[in-house]
Image (tube, rainbow, N blue to C red):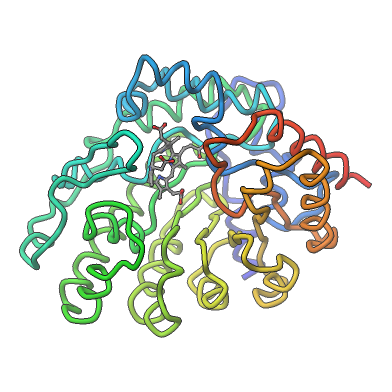
Length: 366
Ligand code: CP3
C-alpha cells in the first residue's frame, strides 16, 4: 500500500501552473499530508468552505442560481478561490455539486429554495435504471472541467485544487429517493430485493465517477474526494456486498497518481471496510474519536477531519478547545488533514472559520 502511494505520488507530474512555486510540488502541506509525509503544521481546509455563510458567496448567489453558478466557469472559479484569499486555507475545492450529473442522466435536477435538491424523475423501476444513458462527462459537464482550468490559473500555485464526485451509493440514494432521505428505505429495498438492478445501477454510476474524476484530474485537479456522505446508513454486511466492490473499482481506476480522499459520515461501523475499499486519506466525522479511528484504520493511511461543524457556531474559546482536542487526538502523527466532520453549516459566522484556520496553524506548529 505505502509503495503504491509513493509510486502514484511520483507518477504525478500535474499540469503546468502560472505560479512561481507550483503547488502539487514537493513542499505543499496538504499534498504531503495526503501521503503521510511530515509537515511544518497541520494543513486545513473545510468541506463547504464556499457556501451561504460566506458574504461574497451570498452576493454572487443573488445574481445566479446554484445551477447557473456551477455552469458558469468564470463564476465557479471565482468562488472556489474565495476561502483561500479570505482564510488562507491549505486547499481549494472546485465549486460544483455531486448532483450535477443528474441532469445528463436524464432524471432532472432542481434546487428548491430551502428544501435541498430535488430529482424530478427518480428511479422507480428496473427499466428506469436500464434506460439511464452512458454519460460522457466531457460532453455533459464541460463547464466543470473549464472551471477547474480557470481555478488553477486563479490560484496561481498558492494551494492545490481538489476535485470531487459523489460516490456511487450516495448518488444512487438521491436518484432513487428523489432527494434527501432519513431512512433510505427505497434505496435499501432495491438493494435487497432487486440485486441485478442494484448491480446495474452501481456499475453505471461507478463508470461515471471514474470518467468524471479522471476528467477533473486531466483538467488540473491535484487531489480528488469521493463523497459517500450517506453510506453510514448501511450495515457492515450490506456495505461489504453492495458498496465495497464498486468503491474499490472506482478508487483503483483513478489516474495521474493524485491522492484520493474517501469520505463518509456515520461510518463508525464501516471504517475497516472503507479502508479495504481504498483511498489515500479516509474522511472521518465527529462521531468517532480521531485517534481511535486512525488506530483502527492503521498507519498506512492518512485521515481527514473531524471537528463537529456545530462547534463553529459557539464562541472562539470553545472552538479553540475543540480544535486542540482534535489535534491532540491526532497526536502530531504525519498524515492528518484538519477538516470538519461534515460541511460548514449555513449560520456559521465567517469570523469563526477565520479563527479556526489561524488556531489550527498556530497550535499545530508547536
Ligand atoms: O466548498 C464546497 O465544498 C462547495 C462545493 C460543494 C457543493 N456541494 C456546493 C453546494 C460540494 C463539495 C458539494 C457536495 C455535495 N452536494 C454533497 C456531498 C457533501 C455533503 O454535504 O455530504 C452533497 C450530499 C450534495 C448535494 C446537495 N447540494 C445538497 C444536499 C444540498 C442542499 C444542502 C444545503 O445546504 O442547502 C446542495 C446545495 C449546495 N451545493 C449548496 C452548496 C454551496 C448550498 C446551497 C446554495 O448555495 O443554494
